[in-house]
Image (cartoon, rainbow, N blue to C red; front, top):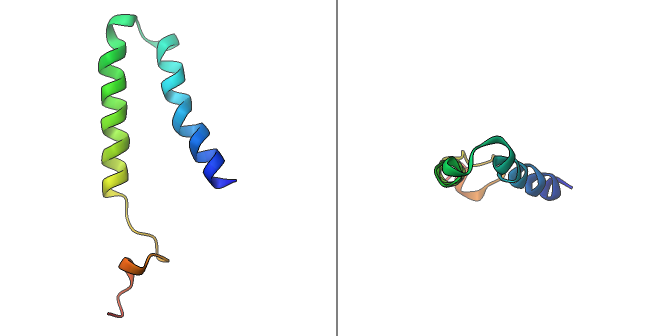
Length: 57
């Protein structure tokens, strides 16, 4: 369920860009959106369940 919601909410903004922006701005908007998504993915904090986040090592 969570994975499905993540896919839907990740895809939704990209699908709406065509309706929200003029065609001249789509490349820039898509590039910025992708860069933001990948930056957030790289720098997101580790969850407490993650083995690399354990402090007892």
